[in-house]
Amino acid sequence: MTNFSELGLSAKLSDRIANEGYEKPTPIQEKAIPLVLEGRDLMGLAQTGTGKTAAFGLPLIDMLLRGGHKPAPTTVRALILAPTRELVNQIAENLKLFARKTPLKVTLVVGGASINRQSFQLQRGTDILVATPGRLLDLIDRRAVRLDTVEHLVLDEADQMLDLGFIHDLKKIASLVPDQRQTLLFSATMPKSISDLASRFLSSPARVEVTPPGKTADRVDQYVHFVAGKAEKTEVLKTALSEHPDGRAIVFLRTKHGAEKLMKFLDSRGFATASIHGNKSQGQRERALKAFREGDVNVLVATDVAARGIDVPGVTHVYNYDLPEVPDAYVHRIGRTARAGKAGIAVAFCAPDEARLLRDIQKLTGVEIAVASGEPHAGADRPVQQKRRGGGGNGRGPRKPSRFAGERNNGERSHSERSHGERNNGERGNGGEHHAAGRRNENRSERPRKPGQGQKRRFSGNGRQARHSA
Image (cartoon, rainbow, N blue to C red; front, top):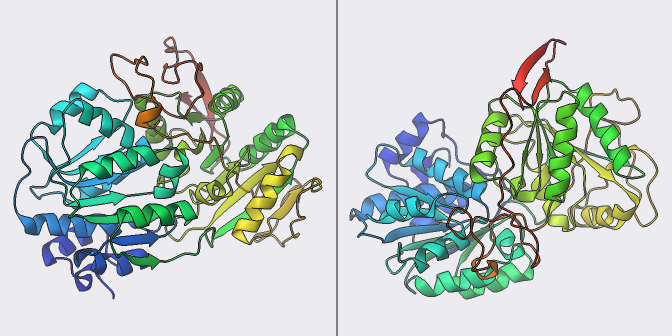
């Protein structure tokens, strides 16, 4: 197959996406699109960054256009569920691009945005609804939307939805959609829980697989620094960022508090830095991502909320300031670099209490991560000393970083875990990570800065300094 029209898509749709630069399908698209067009249920196993959105989005749009009818008020024709606000936003953005100049309506609903506005948008019905499970159930409770006319159901990043505790929400949503429907499930990993979910939701599904579970991106150079603790992590990171002023880096941490603290430290040292995590409002998260995409900041400090689905071109380095507790998360984090055929660098920092986590990552990926500095801690299998491509380095290896996984359970909170007393501007479900009872409201926004506060230097490649607003 060499073009999309040969996969069975209509000539009009193929021509439209060709004008947007989509000419040759990726392996997951080549395998999945014909099966989806046949009406088959599908279980797809592929890494992030392989083109999964187009793999299900293009055939859905094609089938909905052929169907011809408009949705009735408050109804949905195709429902796509994803675990985080950022992934929902990205999926919806791509689908709107694919469906441009067609009568199809694409709507997204996530926590952190006005639920009243979302209710209004759903009044006339929508062809494609992209949603996080918790906010969708909030809207169903308000009778703003109903799912009894759904023809196509898509579960994207299904393994992360299970990790975030959405299983009960997914079961409830599945009970509200018709039994006669097409269901597509996509996942980057295939633990037993995903197989069980597939057997519950899918009927005689076709299976497509383009990458083995746990496989890291081919063009990512991976390195690890063995450090004594957080203080040394911070110093190594600061050195690495200084040596790559033209780079675009994502730094992953495990907790929201740690991410915000590190962002403020880097900002105070003159790095153009922004942060994204569950304590940020939706508007703050969107502004941080926009600034990172447009180059206004070149360091994004994040928790696992950004580990999947965030497609920012040109990310050169991924730093795993904290190693993830779940090895699969490492694969998703380093997948933020080396996208679209480009090379990338992933750097991990391993403290003594993280030796087991590093061992589990290497066992999952089958890759012995090269040592950039330090001596392996007890309990960590010693990585091989690989020859570095491109040479150079000061012993600390900031040119060849490795990555880690970040904050656990940092997506939308499940509907069942929200407290009925939780409020945020009069609405429920504005959350980020899961929290134990008694923790303070995670959705409280940061206090706005005074005019002129937070003006820092931004280092450019030629040594000149530009002003920017942090």
